[in-house]
Length: 378
Image: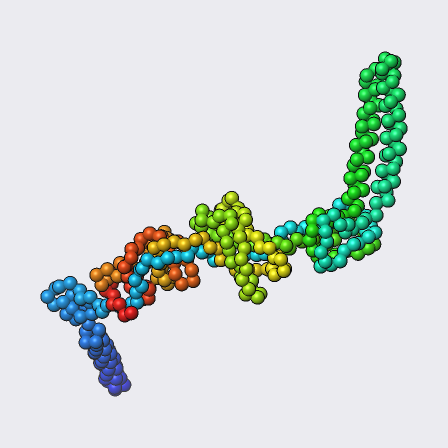
């Protein structure tokens, strides 16, 4: 009984101590929550509690106050005389170029090729062994003599009505067939001698005397480089403005030298993939200034446009449905749809949507929205 009286007070004390700690933690939690609510109301008030500050409604319930005007730079549209020109890149092509290949099989017996040297049209370049073709040709010539004599005899017999017309036609057909075979052999023999198809300059050789070649084997190249062609493309929207005899200026990438040429041909179709038209011009290249395969810059002159309207390239905003610019109207930004024409590195022609005197925003166009107040700084 003494032990029981001693233990009961400890149990009561433990229970009362646990309840006190729970009350203490509850008081501390309420104090922290109250502090957060006070800090929020003190330092982060809602727009309604601000009384109209920072764009919210005023105490009197009026409209939101406008923010400060955004500083921008503008470009005032003026009418100017515009030189219509299209900048493009192009390649130099030989006037004529061909890969010299063998048309028959055989061993090269003669190679009259000097790499990089000019040759004349019809000059013999390569000779291929054709002894077997020559032997077959002589054999066929003997056969033709035999068939010709047989045809004469059959014709005499036909005239005397000793044979039928069918028998004579068979003999005559043998003669005609043999003559056709002879022509084919002569054509094959001619292929064993390769001649220059036009005046030009030889390329590098890929065969030597003694090389066995098959039909299609490449031997060298031949290029006509006086004059040369310049091939380039222009956007499809300029296709109607390009004409034969239009002048162009070529800038050689390697030397930065400029040359004058003229358009001589236009592709009648616009490429449906790139929406461009291929144009070719011709340059005399008297002193071998330009080499086929070289890269050049092309400036195509299309004439002049009077009273053209232009804006800086940075002022034009590309969109899915076209292009836009931002104008200043009554101190606020107003977007305007436009149509563009010729462009250069700094300016773009506007063919529709602007008028002389319009103020076009050229800086800060990513920050302004329709209706925003703007302030011209320059």
